[in-house]
Structures are given as structure tokens and as C-alpha cells.
View 1 (cartoon, one colour):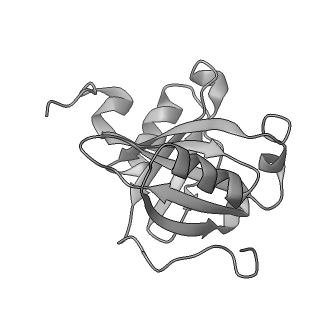
View 2: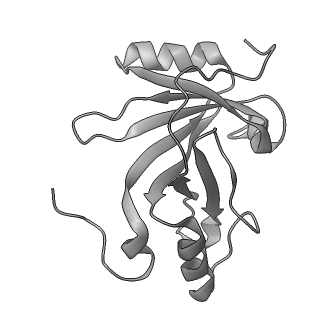
Length: 157
């Protein structure tokens, strides 16, 4: 498959679209969406930096995964007036530090000063939507193997 990204700027660091992030207020709503569309759950996890439980669906046949974000506290609980919705598009990159430098050299700001721990196997940062036509863009570097035994924050499910 031919790479759809340019070999310059940010594009030279993008491996593929990693997932689309959807915020939903409850696990039950996420599971209902998964069931409705016949998605296959890949794994669950917790992101301390954003106090959110996550459910990832699988990548398959070249299709992108969906990440369901269930915020436990903070600003994401008010996303779309608490109803949830599409939050971001995430790109898997080869080197988050290098792409962060590229983003800053282009005059754009990232949400965090440095990449932060996502689930166990990834570090993440976000390009502020004011630079990307209103779309929050997550940058992901995979730093380890997926923990398929991971779970939600203890006591939340």
C-alpha cells in the first residue's frame, strides 16, 4: 500500500492513522456503540494524565481503530455538553520528539510541553486545534507492546 502522507514536514513522520477518538459519558454507551456497529474490542486501558478509561477497537483490513474515551473527571466530562462525540484523529508517528520539533518549527503549539504517557504502550501529545482547522490531532509513538490484560482505573467498572 502506498503511503498517503508527504515525505516532508509532519508527513515524513506519520506511519498511519492510528485511531479516531470518541468521547462518551459511560462505558455502557461505548459498549452499545461497539455492539451496534459490530466493532471488535481490542483492549481496555486507563490514562492517568486525562483521568479517563479507554476501550480500543481493532485495526483490520487497513481500517482505522476507534478509541472510546470515558472521562472520569476533568474537562472531557463536559465534551459536547456532556454528551460526547468525535474528539480527535490520532496519527502513529515514528518519533514524537522529532515531530514535536517539526510542529513547533512551523509555528504551532502542542497541548503538552512534552509527550505524556497514554496507555502503557504509547506516549502522546496533541496539536492544538486552532492550527489544524479546528480538529484536535493526537500524535502517538508506540514505546512498548500492548497490554491486552490492561483494564480500567481500579474501582470504576
